[in-house]
Amino acid sequence: DTGVSQDPRHKITKRGQNVTFRCDPISEHNRLYWYRQTLGQGPEFLTYFQNEAQLEKSRLLSDRFSAERPKGSFSTLEIQRTEQGDSAMYLCASSLAGATTEAFFGQGTRLTVV
Amino acid sequence: AQSVSQHNHHVILSEAASLELGCNYSYGGTVNLFWYVQYPGQHLQLLLKYFSGDPLVKGIKGFEAEFIKSKFSFNLRKPSVQWSDTAEYFCAVNLGGATNKLIFGTGTLLAVQP
Image 1 (cartoon, rainbow over the protein chains, first blue to last red):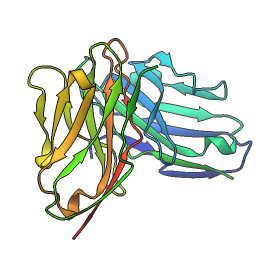
Image 2 (cartoon, rainbow over the protein chains, first blue to last red; image 1 turned 135 degrees about the vertical axis):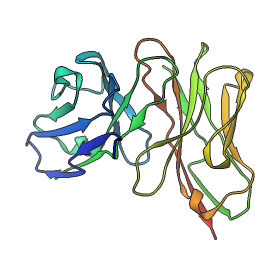
Image 3 (spheres, rainbow over the protein chains, first blue to last red; image 1 turned 180 degrees about the vertical axis):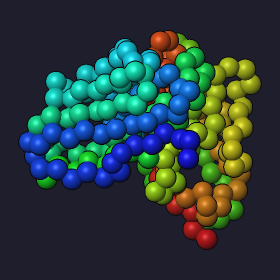
């Protein structure tokens, strides 16, 4: 499968623990996005990379969240000191550069904080 | 702030019925418009997109959407739904520019009864 892959698919963690998610984009895509989706809502933008540079972060992304994309390939999203409100589906998408390009989404990582 | 509204949260139809899902956005400038679909257990997939030109766009699986600029709307239609169209449908916009981040509506859950 040459689509966007995310790992793990599911993560259950205790409040206060740190978690890290990984996203492998489509190989030729230089843009990578993270979104968060909670129950009954559409995906909400968190952050965006062009190659290895993180160019935009949403106000939703608190100081406990950090994202990286070393070497412009895969990306990681880390949440420190998780809270119950962090429970959500975390989606990764990738695309080529350009205003009219399509974003391809992964299946997401479902995080449950207990 | 820019937003996307989907007024139908849940829609139940019988097979062969016609479908129209509403989508309105709030932004006065140029937008790119999308409909994504999420089948049960699968990732978000692009149904169709509008960037410019003919305001009536055709997508996959017999879906189409009409961009009406004066109404800030991009409604999704299908003349005859099938059981396999059961899914969640998301309208999204991007404002172009450097990020191309998507702003999603809250989604419409469509259930097609055989």
